[in-house]
Image: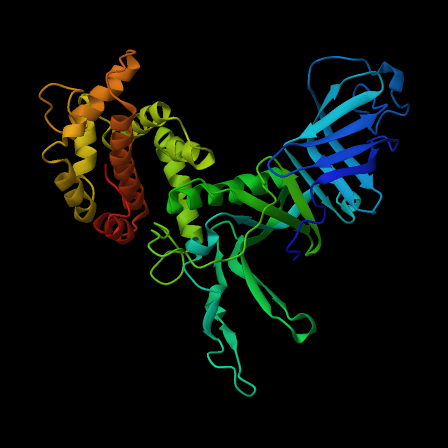
Length: 437
């Protein structure tokens, strides 16, 4: 596959092809992490239907401030590539000028032949795939220590770096590395790898591929790494040929190469490879989590997309923990602090014990929120209630500490739900790489 998008960010002149066979000229604008936009000149006010013999008079295009659905819009660029907006919107602006926009677009060769805009393969990259893989692309390497006569250097490709699974729906999923090797004119040598995921299955629209795989993997990776992970790129195929690049606000178009994790890095809380789990199982567990614990999963989904303000994240976290308890027990009779206490005590011993040590006795910095608290969870519940009633007695520092503590509980609950041992999290806590407060 192509390691770079077929069309880099920029503006491209093209002909927009309408459903009735007519065309209008315009410009396509592509940029990373932004909606795809385009300008069309003399675009009909309403999308023409192929069943209508007469094309709508372009003079009907009038200025209006609203943005309306416009269906599928296709275009042909001067480099003979095609572009398609599967779900376009239009804003008619000055007379004869209309702005088209879409959350997703696809560009590639012979897209005009793909009449239903469905694809049977997608390759994509999200942040954190190197750690999520759990396998290095090279098994061994050898470098020159002393430059003698014909000193060799090189590496051995790790065949286990390509991991394949079959989902319950029959889709084939592969987490692998793309390799690039260059040795221009025998003066230097470069070898790099790029982690990607490729999925093949039944034909479906681009939006379904994003919902079924791209977004869930990005959410799972964000959880595993502990910080938001972007979608960097995606490409789709139909019938095993004609790779087309995907553009839209969810894709940064800034792909990355595999690198060794920095010393002391936590590593992925869940991962594939030796000692890990199949990616299909992890995604199934994530889907079940989102289905059963809706509010709880929404918390992780929200923090995977963007950082939240201190107060907003704390409130979202406590609500998530409260909802998890409610789903698990079905009992709403307990006070909030009792629910939080029960969740904390339900964690595996490797996580529960260091939390108890860190919060018994209650740290002085958390004093003042509640008089004579029973435990730290009593303080957390009181802080949430204070915020709900407009009381700002607690400081941002206190909220950050309580958030780190509650987030550790939430992560422990996810690992327990997945059936994944919390060894990496426990080790990070012991080393001090994962602060509890």
